[in-house]
Length: 222
Image 1 (cartoon, rainbow, N blue to C red):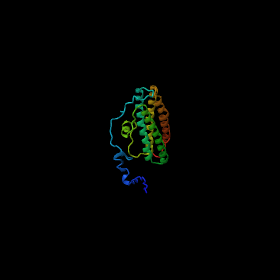
Image 2 (image 1 turned 90 degrees about the vertical axis):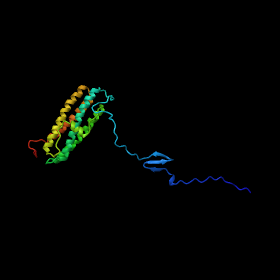
Image 3 (image 1 turned 45 degrees about the horizontal axis):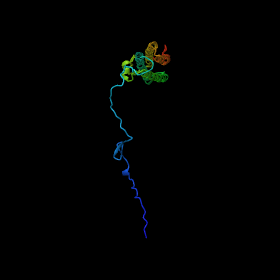
């Protein structure tokens, strides 16, 4: 009697943990090839030539203004930028250091004006970049370029703080009137609008609020 034969397939070998792809130092080992892993190390200490020199506007900025017009506006705006950064930081210094019977009112007012000046800083810097320029940014460059006198590191009384702020506002406002006229004459309506509608109006309003703390008989004399 013939016996029946059955074709049986060999059982598949069971996979073990040793057969799974291995990871080592952020790379997965797969069939003898190292594949990129999920962890990548940052490349630090990189240096390269500048992609745009400060003081030179990019010719590739089709905003309808000639290069010499954009260069003039960028130069003016950088001056306004450094002076606005300076008065912004002056407000924060006074916010931290104010003392006296009007502490609470000035503490809050200084911080409010600081925030408003911060908005102006961003608007000016972005206008500079939009015109194809390079905006100043670092503290050392700001200190070298600003027209606003540097205050001492010491803590000063409120009347002196108010006086410093009013002087700084006046410096900026005089620049604004001069630069707005030049921007208008050169046809740079965008820069003129920024200076008139934002810088002049904000600085005038802040000057009003701060100057109201100057009285004939102050609560504290310097």
